[in-house]
Image 1: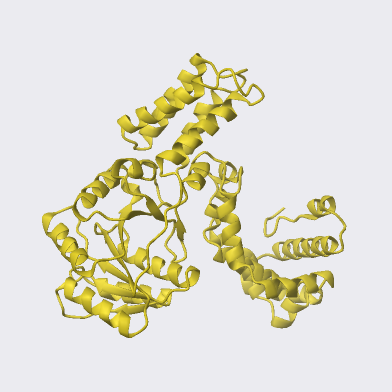
Image 2: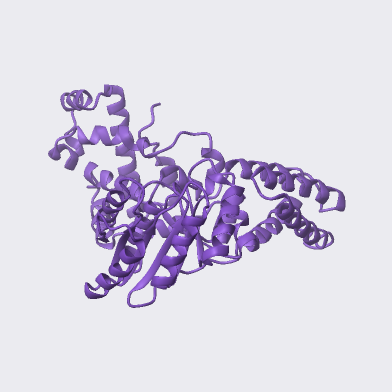
Length: 447
C-alpha cells in the first residue's frame, strides 16, 4: 500500500540524517523532496505545494526548540500531523439510523460498488449487529443482479430483486417496504454505473436519492485511478451531494493521490477503504493510522483490533490448559494458522507492524505461505495430529508421499514444531522471555 510514496518520503527524511538540527537550508531540501514525492503519487501540484508550505512553516518554527529530538524524527512528526489533517483529521461514522436506515451506493462502473455493498452488509451485520438487506437496482449490466445475489449470500444478508423490472426507483421503494415488513433494519441500495460520468446516470441516481431519502449516501471510487478518482468524486458530489467516500482496491498499484486529497478537494470524508477481494477486507478509514502506514510506521492499533475480532476466550483457555500440560498438538497449531489467515491478507497484516513494511515490501508473501505446513498436517491421520509423539520414520514416509514433500522437510517441520511446543510450555511455567526468544522457531522454512 503506497510503497512508492513511502519510499520517496523516507528518502526525503534521510536527507536530514546526520544533521544536528533543522535549518532553513536542510528544511528547504527536504520539503522539495516531499513535494516531488506527493506529485509522483498523483497529488495535484497546487495541493502538494500548499501541503509542503505548511510543513516548511512548522519546521522553521521549531529550529530552536526540541534540540533533544533528531531533525529527521521531528520532520516525520510534522509531515504526519499535516497528512492527518489533509485526510480529514479523524474517522467519520456512517449514519444507519432509521426504520430502516437506508444506504445508497453510487459510483462508476467497475469501481467495486457491488462488492463493497456486500462488504458493508457483512460489516454491519457482524460489527454493528444489524440485519441488512441488499437491493439490486443495477438493471443494465449483465449478471449484475446475479452477482449481488451471490455477494448477499456470502455476507449472510438478505437480497431484494425484481427480475424484469427496469425502473430502479420502483425497485428501491418496494425494497424499503419489504424491509419494514420483514424486520430488516438497514437497506443497502446498489445502483448502476457507467464507464464515465454522463447526464443519464446522474439523472437516474438523483431520482433514486430524491425518492428513497437515504440516511447515508456513499460514493465508491477506484483508488487506482489516482487524481481521476478525485475529479470523478467532485463531479458526483456536485449532483447528489453524497455523505462520504469509499476507496476500493487499495491493495493494488495505488499511488496514494486519491486517499490524500479527496477530503481536501471534495470536502467529504473517506469513510471506508477496501483492501482486498474477500468480504472481510473492509476497514473504517482512520486518517492517523493511514498516515502512519504511509510513513512506514505501521498500524499496530488496527493489527490489534483485527486480532481481537478473531479472539475466542473459550478456545484460549482450552489451549492454555493444553500448553501447560505440554499437550499442544498439530490440530491446535492448524487452528491457530486459520485464525491468523482470517485476520486478512498476510502481507498487509505484516505491514501494520512497525518496521515490518520495509522488511517485507520485496517479499512475495500471501496466504500460500502457510500452504506447505498445512499440506503436511493434512497428510497426517487424526490420531497423528492429536499425538505428535507417534510420528516414527514409517509414518513420516507416508506423510511425505501424501503431501509431496521430502523426508527432510517433514523432519524439519516436526523439529520446529517440537521446539515451539517446548518454548510455549516453558512460558506457561514462567521460565522467562529470554528463553522463549532463544527457542523461537522459523516454522516451515528450510535450513
